[in-house]
View 1 (cartoon, rainbow, N blue to C red):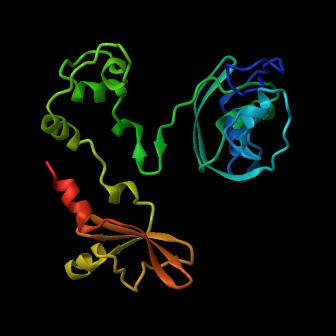
View 2: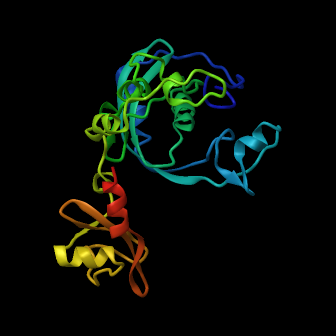
Amino acid sequence: ATDTGDPTGEVIRTSEVPTLDTEGVEAVLDGFLGDRMQVPPAYSAVKHKGKPLYWYARRGETVEVPPRPITVHATRLVSLDEGSLRVVLTCSRGTYARVLADEIAEALGTAGHLEALARLRSGPFLIEDALSMQDLSDLVSADPGRAWEDVLLSRRGGERVPWRPRDDVRQSLAKHLVSPVAALSHLPMLDVDADMAARVKRGHLPSTVPGGVALGDRYLVVHADELLAVAEMTARGPSASRVLSERDDRRRRRP
């Protein structure tokens, strides 16, 4: 185990690795399912008195932080090798996989840390639908194949790799863009007709709200798969957090 919970930290605890089998490991993983409390790691961006915890950790200061509720929805053992596990976790936002790795190792009767982490999904977004930085670079560069850092990063005094014409770039990127409605699909949705859509764009929200919306909840107002507004249910009724106005429409259509 390390003080950071990953390979970059200092080793703080070692232990012999017991003989492990698939059935035993899966039983331990099942014990982590459901709601639980988790203390954020010392090397994290969680704030304490306005500063991230890693600020204190780098100075050798110990800070007591309260545990936070998390949920582990599912675990799947992908592989079991000598001294290492490969596991797919489905968990709630704010879960630290580094902490889980340390706890899982302890539950298996040994010590360990997180060797590598890949986020495969975030809400409705899947990694297989994502573009790599190199793919993105090749879509916009007038010289495909160049290192993406040379194309996408601005370097003072360095060579600037030219981009393709703006219209060509937009056309290349269009099929990869995610609509605002899809990006916010985790929120409840209110679909309105064309007349109400025109009113919403002028700042007038309908008094009706989607079913199940409670005080403080946010929801979408849409028409024909077009996002019109993000609204919030307040004590006084629906309130607009953000309205996409007719001016926004003109900006989006501007060549």
